[in-house]
Length: 134
Image (tube, rainbow, N blue to C red):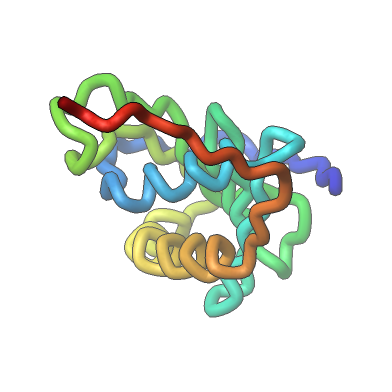
């Protein structure tokens, strides 16, 4: 699947933190992806999140291919433990985009869990044999 997205001029930008569980799950799904991106429907908001290694973009169903908000410049290396939040930049392309942020941060983890629950793991499995200690 391919989607071409457009951006209005950036109206605002702010530093935020993404919970580690959300970031880790998103990157687990990305690692399983065969095309380098993940499409996450956020049905409760009628939004589509498109995740790739560099950014997460959010597209409103009414505006189709126009990005309303983008999350980028993730810095997972700045954390000391895997359960610490990840700093990132939120870019807003609409005047009211800042109001969507709290809802997106609540709904994206739910949508990621729903998608992860539906995903089938295809491919060969391998059992690793380790020698018994002692």
